[in-house]
Length: 182
Image (cartoon, rainbow, N blue to C red; front, side, top):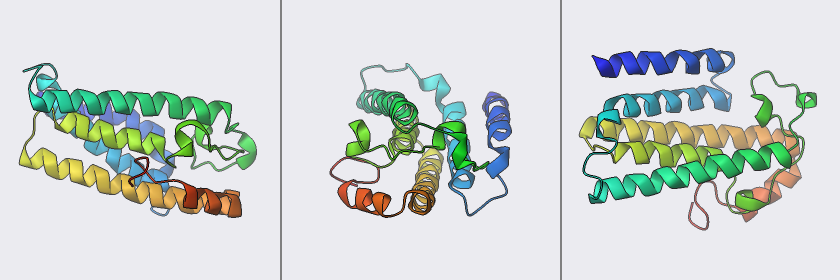
């Protein structure tokens, strides 16, 4: 019962901040919302196991993934804000303000991967999953990963429209989620 209560309580703010994209299946925010919901379910299911067996291999993997996730979100968001120069001139109401970048960011972590914020969500998904691994939570983690993959593909299409050839060249030089791999 506590899992459902936590899930609903955390879902309400996510729904409130995502409402603009909930009816736009062709926009990246639509699929990102469903990934967030999967992550919330994972957290609601695994919060009890956050610090149990702290030196087990699953917990060590979990903490490594969670630390990577924190690094990616912090430095990715800072670069978007400082270099991407978000502006309302882009004027896409389906985008959050920090996504309305006017400059292509291709330094820092963006030099190696195109989607550090989505990559952060991938590491968060699997970091939470490894707290307590079950078949059902594995399926939910896979779903979250699929939703993030679709999110990234649609985001790239939107960036190609906005940045054009500059983004196409950038795509050739970077990986999607993990430096040098994928």
